[in-house]
Image: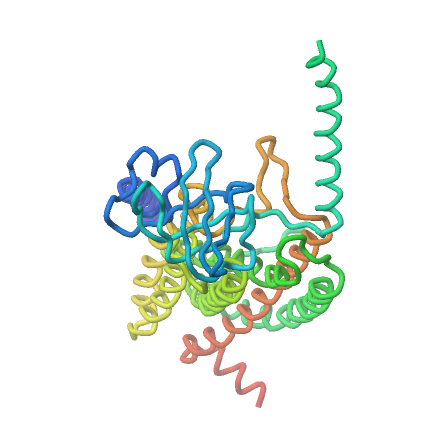
Length: 157
Length: 250
């Protein structure tokens, strides 16, 4: 074996060792690296009880209610499996919307309501012009309407 | 006809070659930047959700890609230098490091500027942002370690080792948004199961992004070749060919 082959072997083996070590560390720290808990995890009591943590999910459509002071907002966050109610007083980011992803930081209060002291918007990786978004929405509505039309006669029977 | 490529692994023959091709890469980069920036600001459509603010993507994403690519290439040069003991390889690694660090900084900085209006915060400690910050520290550590050791060969070995160990961070950055819950969104361009490319943006946005990325590539090659010429002169200043060349220029 030539000297340079030895050095090559050393580098390859070294890198493999580092990769294995990194994998083990990252797997062990899995729950610490995750930025937020999902509603399912909160409902299953996997989130910390008396400590601040972050909760992430989609704002449930039709759940946003504002109090009269104009600053306090109640809404539900869902991962399409479980739902957690959130109460937040403060300024919401511009992207905050029903159906939009959010990450809220706070504590679980009485009655399982999450008392948030910060709400951040999480956006997805889709980019398109407004006209395309409108067209897609119209197509969706049309499909929904067609589905309803075809299903109504069956209901009649 | 065959070209002896190994001829150019000698600093004395690589020096004039780099000097000859670098301006062409710089020229191409300038043209691509002009076209790319024009597309970014005037041709690419407004986004349905983020409005005009999303346009920062056209520098943020290429900078973030470059920060990872350059690190891998730098680590490859460092490995080549350790295996074949070629002087030029470690010089190429040190020539790439500052550019990689700058692109990492640009990615973090534009990310903060993008995060404030869209997410509502400049910075969060999620897996994507934190691992990219570690990449910046790796670049800075590489440059610091190299300049801390006087003997170039020992410096190259120590910093090369750091570069190689740090390469493990690159897949962590790339896959962080898949492996963990992060505030940062997933990739807009990815390989589909069948091996093709899938994207969740319109064609013109994709082209703008790619042209800006090519511009960054050509810029990187031009600047790295120019920088490696300075490093060659510095490290080879006691060699006969440098003295002869400098006398010839006089």
